[in-house]
Image 1 (cartoon, rainbow, N blue to C red):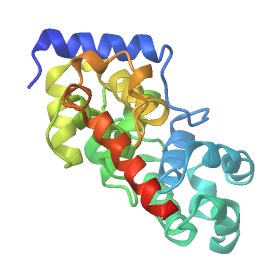
Image 2: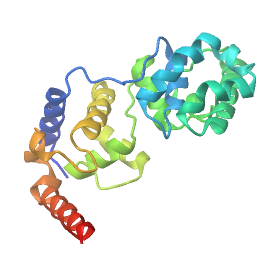
Image 3: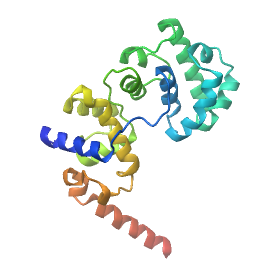
Length: 227
């Protein structure tokens, strides 16, 4: 495990690497962020941002989506993938939001995860970015980067969330997630760009030669393909 001083140094370095880190989803209020985050499952933020303007122009709030025609909703969100299940979840989420919370997005993990289609990651995104409640969303990028660096040793999102939260003050949770996500998208990709990383001196993956092994593996695979 990393010492508190090293953990602070790592996240300070990530902050410098990705200044102004924030969610890349475009939203104007907590409800829009909740919907956008639900749509981002198995999709990209960029694709969701292409879909949501027309979606919110037609269905601007929980009441509108709860009463939406399923076929029309599916057409609007089709590009995000898994549109049938997402449509069902959006209508169910909006209906429960109306009946239990008068259409207002609740600022509580338990209340949010009780909504159809809303898991801890989605709830943490909304809490941390739109409702001012500390939250640390864990997605595939957070899992990959935090394990590679050596901050955690787990692929369980709930366990990783708890471990990362225990290392940092609550005020830093959301930004920590944002920087890990951006680092995973831009630098610490499945094929990482280690020479560009200013965390590499504290990174277990880099220290143990993981990048070199990956490069050799790729070269070997390319050589076999040429035969």
